[in-house]
Length: 52
Image (cartoon, rainbow, N blue to C red; front, top):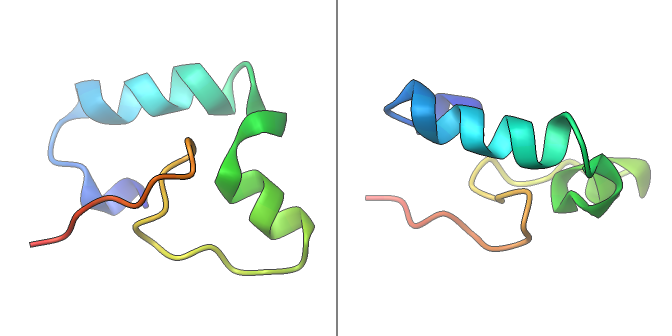
């Protein structure tokens, strides 16, 4: 997912919101805990990032 962002500010928002605080609410974390590989465009909020 991280390589899909074009600015550090965008990436820092998601990292601060989910990776550094509420990781148990992160859809990517939940997917990995269930033994699944999350799609690259899955945001921590559970929404899919529009590509293209």
